[in-house]
Structures are given as structure tokens and as C-alpha cells.
Amino acid sequence: MSHKHSLQRLSSPAPASLSAFVHIIGLSSFLYSFKYLSDNPNPINDSYGWHFQFLTIIGLALAVLTFTTGILADLSTSPILFRLKNTLSICTTPLEVLISILYWTLRTVDKSLVIPDWAQLPLLADLSFHAIPSILLTVDLLLFSPPWTVSTPQAFALSSALAFLYWPWVETCAQHNGFYPYPIFDMVGTKGRVGLFTMSALVMTGSTVMLKALYERVNGKEEETVGKDGHGTPLDESSLSEAASGMARQVGWMAKGNVGNGGEPGALDESSIPEATGGMARQVDDMAEGTRD
Image 1 (spheres, rainbow, N blue to C red):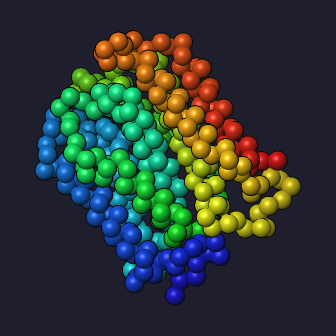
Image 2 (image 1 turned 90 degrees about the vertical axis):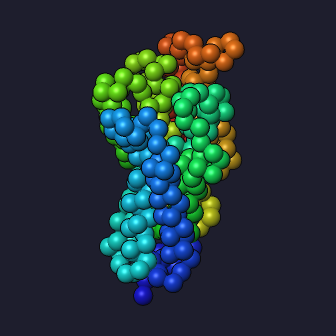
């Protein structure tokens, strides 16, 4: 018999439950995405790093691990596996939200920034890679998980670690393959990639802040966590949409500088990188401000 947190909306882990159903549906979707890669080979299949050159696929692999742990926790009602699933979620869910924000923003600006000419995804596959994981992981957080206790500095440290571990991996793959997985990486140059990875760490941190605030709005918060130290002070929810929109505009701004007249790639104005990154940092700080006195 599971003992759910007082703020957890629905019972989990539990074998015959909505939690198990969502985890099974999610894992099926994630595995379908990997099957799609095998059934529809492209030049990446034979290149160094396989599809794990893409942040999307790294996030998808983490989503598989998270929901597999969730299913095992449901079937066994193991509190250890349940805690492990929730710990993985702290990394996986904001990462998938980051992937969705960056992909759909850049795709809207110019899809050639993130999709090579030879990679044309049908809508169902596109959604399975770039939308469904973030949606289902957010549902898992809001309905079947206890509240996150990670602080904004901790979230930024985790996001930065992921961003700057991914960077050398991408560079290693590019050295072997002679190309970058995302066209935008080749367009912006080294300084531009530094700006992009820094910006990504900030967006992922902002995603964590937004998800925590959304959890409080849906499920409430523990009164005992509210005190003079500022932990648990309500976030100004009216700022969420503005801050998220601002972060998305920063992404589009940095990308749009690479698209010249007629939609052709152009040179990045590197002087815009500090300003864009600084704008991203201010957005995250604005979102986190409501959690501190």
C-alpha cells in the first residue's frame, strides 16, 4: 500500500492505477520514437554517435529511463523505485520542456536551423520526438509526484552541467563526422555555440522554476515550508507567461540573426550574444524572484 505525499494529487505508485496507465502509454510512445529511427534510416544512423548526437534523443533516452522506473515502481509499489523515478524527473522533465521550447521556437523562425534537408519528419513522428515527452512528463509531475525540493541555484547548476557536458560531446561527434547534428551549430560558430549552450542552461533553469510554480498552482504547497528564509514564498503567477515568452523571444532573436534575406543563412552578430544571454538570465531571475523575500 503506497503512502502518497499530502500534496500528490493521485495515487502512485500503484499497479492498477492511472499512474501505471500513463507510464505505459508514455513508454510506448518513447519506444515508438526509437523504432522510427531504426525503420527510417538516414545519414546519422551510420555516423559517429548515432542519433545520440541530438539533444532530443538524449532527452528521449532519459524519458525512457524515467518512465521505465515509474512502471517498475507502480508494479512493485517500491518506495525506493518511486523516489528514483522522482529524482530522474527533476532532470528529465525540465530537459524535455527545454527541448520543446527550443525546437518549436527555432522551427517557427526557420526550420532549416534545426532540421537538415534530408530529415523530413511526418507530424506524428515530429510530435512524438518534440512534444509528447514534455507533456507526459509534466502530467506525471503534476498528478503522480510529490513536490520538487530543488532550489533555483541547484537547478541552474544541474542545467549548466548538462549543457556543458553536451557541448564537448557534440564537438567530438563533429570532428569525426565533419558536420554538426543541428545546422544552427555550424551557422553560429564557436562563440555562438557558447551563447546557445549558456542560453539553454538558463532556459532549462527557467523551466524548472515554471514547473515548480505550476505544481503549486495545481496542488498547493506545504504551509510549513513558508518562512522568513523565503523558501516557499508564492511565485507571482502573472509573470510566468511573460517570462516564458521572453525566454522564447531570446531564443528566436539569436537564431533569427542567422537567417538573411530570402531565408538564406547569414552570419551571426556575435555582439548580440552577451545581450541575449543576459536577457535570458534576467528572465530566469524575474521568475525566481517570487520564491525569495
